[in-house]
Amino acid sequence: MDELIQYAPDLGEGFLNNIKLSLIIAVFSLIVGTILAAMRVSPTPVLRAAGTAYVNVVRNTPLTLVLAFCYLGLSDTLGLIFSTEVPLTNSFWLAVLGMSAYTAAFVCEALRSGINTVPMGQAEAARAIGLTFSQSITLVIFPQAFRAVIAPLGSVLIAMIKNTTVVAAAGYTVDVAAKMRETFDTTGVSIPIFIGIVLSFLVLILPIGWYTGWLARRLAVAR
Amino acid sequence: MTENGDVTPLVKLEHVNKHFGALHVLKDINLTVSRGEVLVVIGPSGGGKSTLCRAVNRLETIDGGQIIFDGQPLPEEGKALAKLRSEVGMVFQSFNLFAHKTIRENVTLGPIKVRKKARDAAETRAMELLERVGIAAQADKYPAQLSGGQQQRVAIARALAMDPKMILFDEPTSALDPEMVQEVLDVMIGLARDGMTMMVVTHEMGFARRAANRVVFMADGQIVEENTPDEFFTNAQTDRAKDFLSKILTH
Image (cartoon, each protein chain N blue to C red):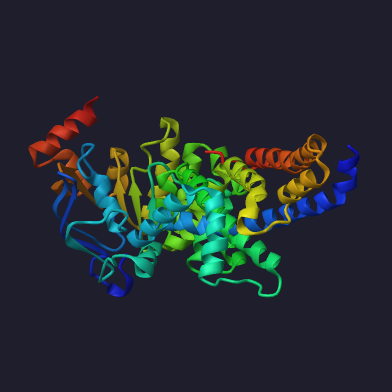
């Protein structure tokens, strides 16, 4: 218990890094996932095929592999470098890149299941008043699809937040999980620290589940 | 009602063919709709009436022949097709009001996003149209809060808001409870009187008699008979039409 209190500032700093990662990845993965979903329902076969291929490859690759690929493949071998001075900044953005790419595939599939809840007639009515494909998507289809999948999207975001604990695979070694291992090694104490971190995640994530559940009910589209 | 004495037909279908797989749903259709004309299409289910109606704004593509609208062949896709559709209103069997938008927003969406009208002007016009179809009091409700008949009248207002050159009606009363059919037909009869060009797929023989300039009888993907409503209902020429009329008019 004493160790938990003693190392709390250090662990807290790690935890904040996880939150920082989560916020940025949430924004990117929602944007990229929406674009992917639009590609997968577009009338252009090339876009559809590209979207499908992306989702099938990325969604079925283990996250640690995706992150290791960003670190070793993209950065070390292909020379994608976000910061030459600070290695941790570089690995932070590599982690953001890998996790956004990975989470976007799940966002895309959640959204696509939402698109399937929107009746065909909505798209026909949108086209019939002269809206273009992109207008139909952004003004009529996606707003309804989003509302139908708020709760599943919440689950995707929750999984993403917990996944930020493996970013060490991208070389970002100052997140809470990495700090936890360090503390284990230094102090030899595990259970209290372990419990402390689990509780932190509960406090962070439980409200997200509650909030998205409430939002899903409030914004549900009546038919 | 011809504009500047323009007597070219608004819609002209020439040798239009359409298949759904092995099913030949439109067989060499030739048909014109004049400006200001109310054309009613009737016939047995599965005869190709809805497909014909939906082909006019290219919600259904065709395999052969061509469709000319206002002197131009229908564009195949993209912005030109969207522009064409903005000039052809459509009222669906299942209303298809945008479920996440209020009644007012349903009517203003097209004018604002397609016609780039100012929001104020679009809303003023929307309220006029909702007044006309008798739904003004419900403007801030959502579609699911309205009855079927009310929703269909909003759908007509939504089509009118685009100031279309014609309106297609694809079985507008078929999904309605019987007591709501008349309120929708009344609005349609009003439009017909005001000179709107209309193509109406319907089973409402009363509407055909009262409002149509011409009746087209379709069966098995073909236009079997074409006549004025009076002639058609009292003196059908083909056995197919006589048979159909005997089934629907006697029971």
